[in-house]
Image (cartoon, rainbow, N blue to C red):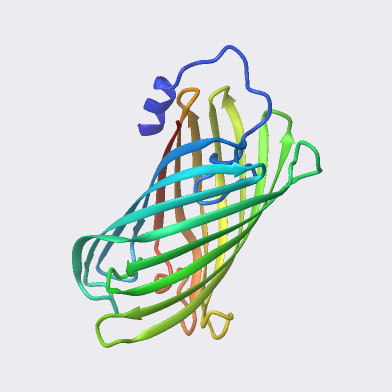
Length: 280
């Protein structure tokens, strides 16, 4: 229903835009475009994660971000995040119902190859974050991490279909307030996406993401793995505003030492994301 309303409200255009701007069209992935020098954007990103191995698990985080492009091919983004946790009866996670300021982040992206001048686009990205609330459990502490991404994309059919690949490495460190327990973990992943232009201002498609989690920041002992798949929709609401909606379900997974077909220890059953942005 939300997608239908967005399509109905989005302004129709008489002719399709030339090519794609992949900076914001994907949901959980990133494209290789970084904007033009001098551009500034305001963005809100809401991510929901639902379902664990038992009980009721709901976690929602809302991030407010400012993006600037100070130099050609280089983008800087700073953001702050508030989180909501509603957890009851989940194994190995304390029951919790709270709303808190979670932390801040810095996202740096540099485009190495422009797909308009090369066979494909290529961008490297590093997102650094420092948090006072654990993203999964909501427990208080000191959490630091980085997400390194190598992004590639290419127009498969000019002005109609675009494909993208992300390769991901996420080292994380946490020290919890209660008990002073420290944890280190790392995740590697590969993600694939495809979108087609169904209207001049509407793109529809999907994303497939595979992750492997390890203990230690150097990919130490293997903990589990999961495969997520789901649809993505992008709407160019006006010349300056946009909306991206994405949802993923865990289609397959397996924690270490279990024969289960889903890994609900290290990952969630469902993930959803809504991103709204506007140029200013």
